[in-house]
Length: 335
Image 1: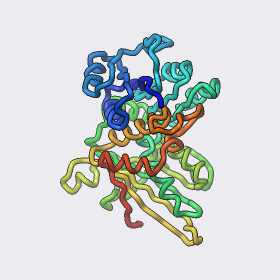
Image 2: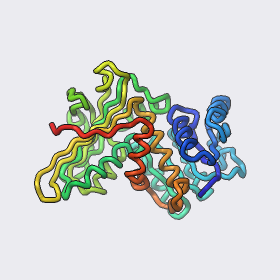
Image 3: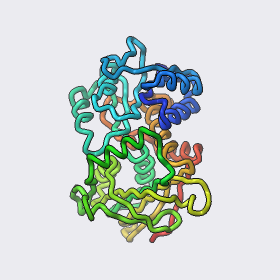
C-alpha cells in the first residue's frame, strides 16, 4: 500500500474537494496534496480535509514546482493542454487520471503513453461522471447473451452547474466537438446536425429533449460488449426530483436491448440517480480509481498500462460506495 501523497491538480474545486473528502473517509492515513493556482484556497481546503497540504503548482516546470516531494498518484481535474501533469507522473513512475478530455482530444495523451508504455498507469477518465454509466451498464448487461443496442441518456438539472471547471469543459467541448461519436450497425460515425438531436424519457417518464454527446463510454462499451448500436444523449432541464417539488438531482438512464440467456428478446431500463447532482458521482469515480491505482484498496497497485475507469472499478465495491454517498440504482419499466 502506498502512503506517498496523492496529488490533486485542481483539488480546491468542487469535484476535487469532494474527491479529497471521499479519499479521506476511505483512507484516513493517506496524505493529500491539494494543488491549485490560488494557494490560499488550496490551503483552506487542505485544512478542512486534514492530513493534507495546499500547494501552488507550476505547470511550466518539469517537477511542477514540487522538487523532490514524493508523490503516489496524480489526479487532474482541469484541462492540461501541455500534458505537464502526465509527463510528471510518467517521470516519477506513478499513476495518473485526468477527467477533462473529449473523444477528439485524447490523441496527445495516448501518444504520451505510447512513448513510455511501461512508465506508469494512465487512466483516460472522461467517461460520463467517471464510471457512473459504464460500471452499471456492464453489470446490467450480464443477463444478456447478446447486446444489440445500448442507449445511454443523462439528464443534468439546469441548476446543476458542477463548478467552474466543469462549465469550462462543457463550453470547450461544445465548441470543438459539434459532432458526437456514435456506433450504428457496427460502424463508428459522428452525429451532427439533425442526427445529433434526440429525445428520451426521464425517470418520471417525462419526454426530454437531448443532443448527442461522445464521452469515452461510447468507445469503451462498444468494444467491451460488441454491441453494434451505442449512443449517448444529454438533456439539460428540470430533473425528475425537482419536478415533484424536491431538490434537483442528476439522473442517468441505461436502456439495453438484445437477447437473454435463453435466446429470447430482452429489453431493460435502469437508472442511476444522485440527489446532489453530478459532482458527487464524478468525485466518487476519481476516488475509487485512485484507491485502485495505488493499492489503497488493499489489493496490489495497478500495473503500467492505458485504462478506462470501468476497467479498474469492481462493480460490487462501486455500488456499495454509491449507496454510501446517497446514490440510487433503480429498475424502470420498459417504454
